[in-house]
Amino acid sequence: MITYVYLITLAIIPYFLLRNVEVIINIVFTACLIGFAFLAFYQTSRKEKIISELYEALQSEFRTVKRRLVTTDKLARKEEREQIARDMHDSVGHQLTALLMQLEVMRMQSTDEKTKKQLSNIKDLAKISLDETRSAVKTLKNEEEGGLSAIIRLIRKLEAESHVRITFSIKNGAFTAPLSNEQTVAVYRVVQESLTNMMRHSHVKEATILFESVANNYFQVEISNPFEHQSCVKQGFGLTSMQERMEHVGGKLNVQKSQGQFIVRGMIPLERKLIDK
Image (cartoon, rainbow, N blue to C red; front, side, top):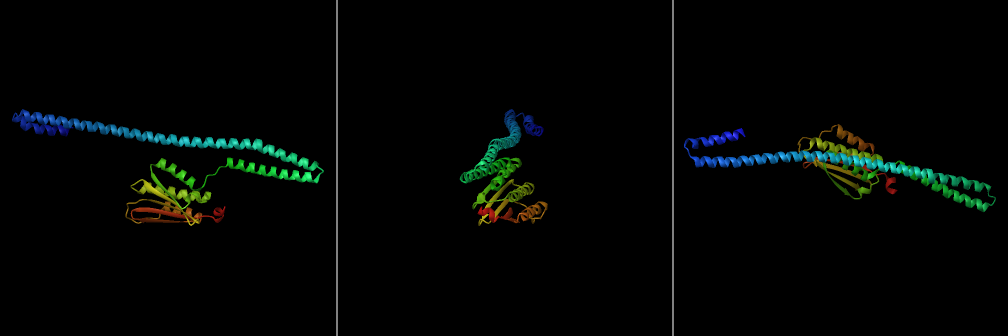
């Protein structure tokens, strides 16, 4: 502003000495218009900056509340499952156990072989029902999430927390690939480490993730992101850790740089018994 006023003064002085009032008025009027324009631009920029900071704060608060709601909802579902499991164990389980005892007493007291055989069959059915009830109670208490759906949920959470834009692509029945819990964890850790490397070294915070089932025998994951450095890829601790995780579950990892893209590709063999099942 001081520089602006100084330049206007320098422009006016020659005409002031020549007493050219009309030119002086035009210069002052134009200077005032430009000054108001600069002032309006400054105020608008300042307001935009304040709004942007407020938006970022609200967005961060929204993510915090969203994570809290997800956690609360998960705890609520867990408590509900445990309550149902307790009710099933205390009511159905105990009643079936009492029924088994009564059937055994009736079978021992019966003198008719045909009746004993019928009671024995009923007892077997009651025992099967009791075993299924116990299995259902155990499942409710120990709910395990696995497979590709669990990986996607975990990555979406990472995406929301890290301001990263992730594009998913699922091909050839990868969504129903029978991944074990150990394989699921290995794939997720590879994706997580790849995204962490991307956030550290890439100028663009976006990545593409491809999940694919190859010939129903292998599960393939590919993570690619823009990569501007021209130097060769160095095998650091992160890449070594990813490679060890894949090898631990019988898979392999390949890292390469191609056409401005940094690509991490992992492949895991699917267990035949899981596929047949």
